[in-house]
Image (tube, rainbow, N blue to C red):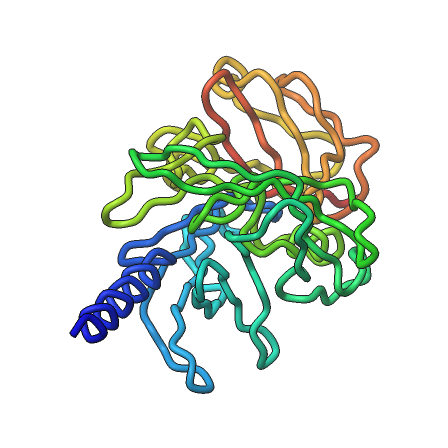
Length: 299
């Protein structure tokens, strides 16, 4: 007579466990490592069936400024995942890769999910567990793993991060290969900002601002975060209104690959003698705010 009860108990336990990963309202936010300011918004949007396997749909959106300095939100793709006894699988190229292994022990390792399309990081690189433990988050005890990003031979790539149960990386983007691919073609996402779901308050261990800030500004919108340069294109120098130099103190000029080409103290005239022809973004910064402008340099 105990067998039916035991079966129902195990079935209920398995069902409850399966709901731990990506429940209703699950939402991750990451800083954006691309050229224009913004963040990556990843959230659970539904369920699907892939080759007989029930899976969660995680939709990824870029929220930030476009090249015209307007606030936008664009879908950049979906990921398909599911959990099986503490292992999170990710669908990629018609197969299931191990994304996270929350039950792994020290010394265990697995191949990084979503193999790279560049040669920056070797194919079949791995995540190796260096330490494990438990931490209390929102009155829940969750396991964490400290992992080392490794070559296929398990020699270190020089990057470590912490994976928290049913949240993922707490220092980097949730797709481990992205930061290596980004060295060539631009990252999809950057450092972890926060995670929450309907019954779990926002967890942001390393991010002090609101998770949905586009450029780290309070009440940011397109009119407050951007300004215009006249004339534009410019040749030898940028001329700014005095109102900018009285509010902002420094400037940076970024190239299209996101690298700083010129920076310094802000003045009403910024000389561009050593800047090559091309398209750039001018960032002016003050104590608590920034603004951005498109800039085209010509001879």
